[in-house]
Image 1 (cartoon, protein in one colour):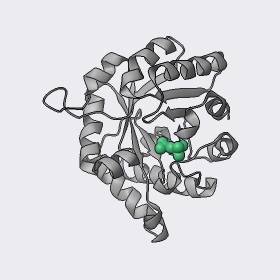
Image 2 (cartoon, protein in one colour):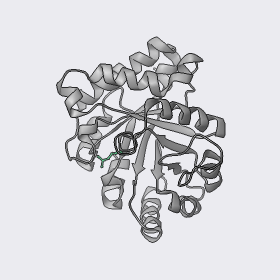
Image 3 (cartoon, protein in one colour):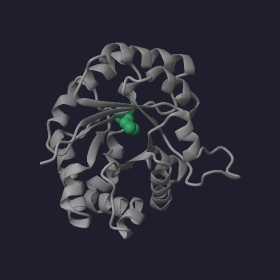
Image 4 (cartoon, rainbow, N blue to C red):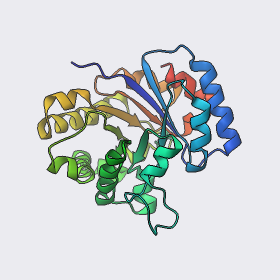
Length: 253
Ligand code: PGA
């Protein structure tokens, strides 16, 4: 079994002013000095990216944007492109978050275009997938996950080439921001399904290397249990990543 380094990622969503973002990143930096064996990533709003990049310096903390447009430039009012994110200091970009899908109408086709554009620009995509409560209760979880994987990663699938750097995040919609976490068994079951899908669709070595994060009400008191499962390689944390006293214990799970 190849080693997959744990990754704890904080998705700040549309929260924190520039000043607040600066205080939070400083608190995280102060606490993680010398910490080894875990990758840490933060995804601030666009307006804080550059400042947070400067603050994290050579600490090794990774920086992600929360979205991007697939074109490099053009008449797309309100959008931000891959080269702009690279210039701001991003190494990663979250794509297809359920809030993008449900509130802003983002489809698998759009996510697929963005995944291709991210790789072309040298950004590592963190592709989010997850079923709604209705879909889970109807017993459709695996069908939904499979359809999202096939649609959001279509070009990679057509080319039969999934770069090992790609990160997937399983975020059951019913667990996001609700305080309702998937049990470690529920999460592991879906993570194992996703890894098997990669194994069968691409190849065993890729399946062994891709990191699959769990997201949805991750808190200090449930992080260790989730992360102890064999196919859960880290966490995408929303609410609990906004306060150092919550985020740090998760990083130190
Ligand atoms: P939450 O959000 O931790 O607040 O549930 C997770 C996410 O949406 O990435």
